[in-house]
Image (cartoon, rainbow, N blue to C red):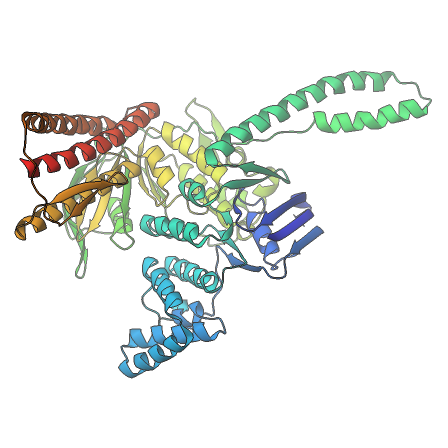
Length: 639
């Protein structure tokens, strides 16, 4: 089924066009990611498709049977109403009875629950109610009678997401779901659940996201808005990067060819006679077309910077027996750690376990309950916080930057003016005289990052730096941080960003426990799943022994599955005994190699390519251990 057709769409704000004469089609089942720099028009295009904005020129057709659902970065609510009233806002009998049932359950009103159950049975609403329960549970939404106006920014975002998913879950048969940065303010488990949910629901999707793993998981086509045009790429993010590089190379070759032709035509124009024949007039017109092509600029502008970092002394930060709690909730219990020069540490854990409090304690913005936090005299913090910029006056961008300094020192001894520094961060001269209040969310984030780096810090603390940043800026930020010689502490739910940059993780496990894991986020998830499998296997084995039964281990689809059925022991021969002995040695050798690889992965000076090789070897070892341990269990039962 054909959902949307757009022909020759053009949209401008003032004299600056966001996009010009773009055309596209969306069919049922399409899963598309939209990529562009901040301020180029991604969110505007979504609002146009949803009917919330109009185009300057062009035709837009949306099938009459298609419902367009838009999840925006800045969701709108009926502020004085409750979470429950905002989520279940549709005027539909099934939605109404589920709203009554959820309200009765939370109020623990037995009579109301019984009455709601009767109506649920009449309308056969239980399947949809189960879906609603899943959505609310996975997004950690429990206080349904709380007024929306009292929610935090992260809670508002999750409620808005739940509201959108409930709407499309009720009837998504012909729905175009458009989502603008849906992973912001979600922890990793929520993001992974959302990936699974969107694939399971089989919706037609148009998505704006900076999370590259999420992009690859839920979409199979990428649209890019650039220089007022739209470019379409089939495939994943890696394919997009390759194809875009090839496109730019081709365009550069075309411009070079036009420049050569322009030089020849320019010479002819200077020598042409004053009399204008039809032939010469035609050639003159062609000259101006060639001139336009020759002077075209392919601006693949990137944030490139060699900053003069303040010297970091031998002593960085020492934390000794640090305790911190809020009431009954423990954040740290006797935490010990000494930071070294050039460390890159990722901080992960569920929302609310104290990650931001930990960052504040390092900077002496919050006190510890007990213990010592000694910060070296040479440490200069650069804090990129979730709160964003603190703006007292609505200044122009250039005026705001000059409140920090007029010039920025470089590593080569030179310096940049505030205006030149802004250009490196993709703020054109025109944009520099824009008022702060007129900037997009992503542009404000980019400006916030600029002001953090403008102070030449040697210990960067980045709290969710990827939220609202566009993918081109993110890729360049990663390149900058990979060359940065100071310490970096990153709190992020962006798995790709963490995998690329961190050497090891502080895992906040709750109840004051913090694990120091030697590896990046993907390696941690692999390790976590391995441990869960081992635990399950041994629990099954112990359960089997306690019941006096034999444990039969079979393999289905490559995974060990335990069966409690008694088995007849086979006669054990020399071959099986020998295999059992060799397996014990092989498992021990693999465990030793695994430990060595993990130590190498924790080396902060290891090149990125080597870390990739080591990461792949970690997965190979894990798979081999899984196979050998399963076989060892089988033989141990026989012997």
